[in-house]
Image (tube, rainbow, N blue to C red; front, side, top):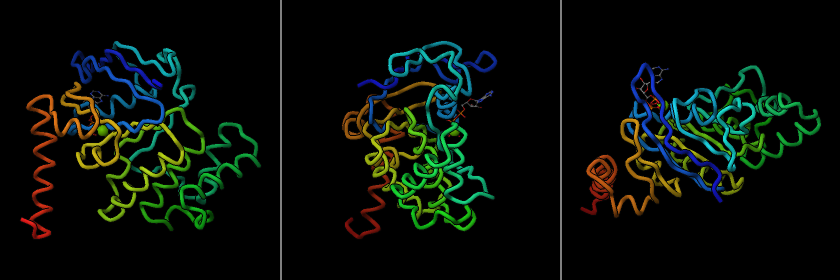
Length: 252
Ligand SMILES: Nc1ncnc2c1ncn2[C@@H]1O[C@H](COP(=O)(O)OP(=O)(O)OP(=O)(O)O)[C@@H](O)[C@H]1O
Ligand SMILES: [Mg+2]
């Protein structure tokens, strides 16, 4: 079922189009990545979807309804950034509870939901720690729990693992996939990393400056790249990675 439908979305800053007639849709429960180089408009797209920025033209339908005039708080979307933005003076549990309390949930209800969500995400042993006592990966997990506890209609993630070290990045990459399955959430994942997008996604939107070059399943993009841009930015890049992997394992 179609969860989100974006049609001819355009955003101009001082007359210059940063997004140029972008159209795509996201299905319920889908993991969709938006892959593109720095400055191509990924964060701008996300900020418009969540309502922090207004489009110049074009339409966004959430569950079939136009959300143009809805403020961020009424869109029911959750967002996860690169920097976890946890409150340093609150414990893990309090960080998640606080988000629920802001939504006027009862104290007992908030506690129960917070404990359950943190347990589902593998943080049951760390409830009383402060963010500074956690690794980067664990902090990001708390931020994810805080978002998922609110049961969002869509989860938007803007380069959520790019600040982690290599080892934690690999762990979180695997866990993100499991988390998405467990919560059956619809996720839009922004990244400039080809491997990340290909590993995680049901479908990938490949962007160049302000426009979409291809939207397809990873396999399809790799085997049927639509144009020279995709061949260079995606296929050649992945081939090169594979090549150096083979060399390093002595298979070539
Ligand atoms: N408020 C603004 N006013 C003017 N130009 C802006 C504004 N916000 C973004 N831009 C421009 O829009 C373009 C796209 O920016 P955006 O942040 O969406 O890129 P991005 O794909 O997220 O890049 P990165 O991978 O580096 O995060 C850039 O050229 C940027 O300078
Ligand atoms: Mg960005």
